Length: 361
Ligand SMILES: Nc1ncnc2c1ncn2[C@@H]1O[C@H](COP(=O)(O)OP(=O)(O)OP(=O)(O)O)[C@@H](O)[C@H]1O
Ligand SMILES: [Mg+2]
Image 1: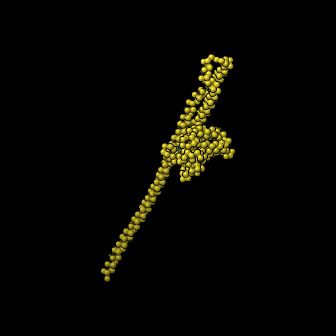
Image 2: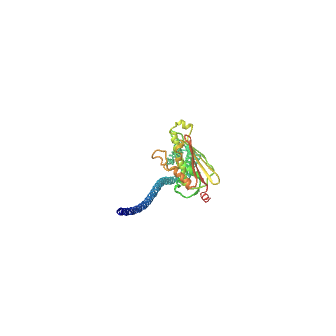
Image 3: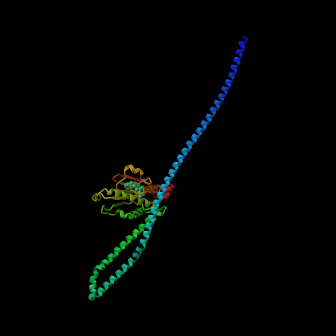
């Protein structure tokens, strides 16, 4: 019995020992598990942080990419604007150069015209006096009188001089218009006659208004209000008129290409220019053509830089974008258009009469 008890107690002791060892192991395992859990949580936290940082930097990169794209776009636009204004200023310089070159010889002719008129009148009077006092000159003189048809010469010489005078005055007007038009680089605001700017631009475009063997002349209908004094940047406003009028002429040409001479004659191409005072602060200039019109699907894009429907090499698509900028940004005005496909298009420019006054308000 004693032996039995002894063996039991040894077994119990061993079991207790094993139990202690197991508990220790369990405790160690437990502590390792906790350590592992803490490690995992730390790693998870770090991983999440890295993911967040990666996401942030991805958004950042996307934003930078977008910014770069925007910068590229605006550089592209700026480049095109510079090309356009360079073109306009080159045109201005060329026009100013031509005006200057024509001005010298014309002044020469114009300055001498009054003298030549005076001399002709004097000579004719002298011939008349000779004739009165010597009614029967020698045969040679009589033959010469007949040959040169003196009576006709007397009448015609005066008329010839008159028409030379009218022609020279016309050339002087043209030179003046060319000079006005070439004030393109003038960046400052001045009180100008808007109508003068429109008329000068029309004069530059005269060659496109004339009749051809395919179509009669384009009618220009002017309905000018009383807005001779508007404070604006003359050169830039002329540039806007030029862009709108060239587009109108292109649209009329496009429309006429599909019509016969007869159809065009029965329903002639025209550009109507109406100017008016809106109220004490605003003036309005509307330019309407009865050309091809603008399809509704592209109407939203007209003022977008580089938007063009013209063949490669003909249009840059910058005319309206620049005009929009000149009117809305530079002149704090409005530029809009109304178009019915197949009927025509009207561009309406509205600008404040006083630039400074408006800015102060
Ligand atoms: N009066 C108009 N009638 C019909 N379409 C027009 C008219 N004015 C503008 N458009 C349309 O708007 C487009 C953009 O005009 P915009 O003047 O900006 O460029 P463009 O005339 O094509 O080229 P450019 O830079 O040489 O002027 C034209 O291509 C044309 O399709
Ligand atoms: Mg154009």
